[in-house]
Image (cartoon, rainbow, N blue to C red; front, side, top):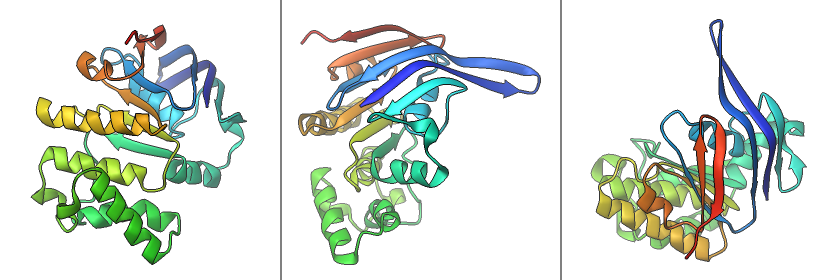
Length: 226
């Protein structure tokens, strides 16, 4: 489903060039449940941004479901990000003045889902993440764990094939974090392709395959023994 070939990513800051990814080769199959682990500054987030079509490689190729992403125009990329890929961030990135319902509704509005179908889908998602009773709550009226559950529901709104989660438990206590990972475990059993970026080895152990990245290069790409 995902194939990176010799991907290099350089960033320019003034006259200084910094190589964030240095020749990354990676294959992720449909239905894989992957943990991406590495120290701070290892290139984890850069890699996720490339896979999520939020950024483009300096050189090398990225194929998503067999298509070369470099050939897509901005509209196609925006469409991909809204319908094919679900993002979950450490900082939740919820709209602070919108209710849980309205936050989850945003991607459905963008994908032009009709009113009745939208309502039904939001109701299903709130149920899925165990927040049926919080539909009208704003982020300020929720705990961190609840906000992250809303963020996951929003990421799932358009039934994406791929879920990218960047330190999804980073701002949560361990109990809330475990509850969040259980949702990912459940989604994985449903056949979703999931990549969790984490520095927490206990979280990574939930996945079926841990990829270690260091200094912009993949050090090991193992399948976890169960």
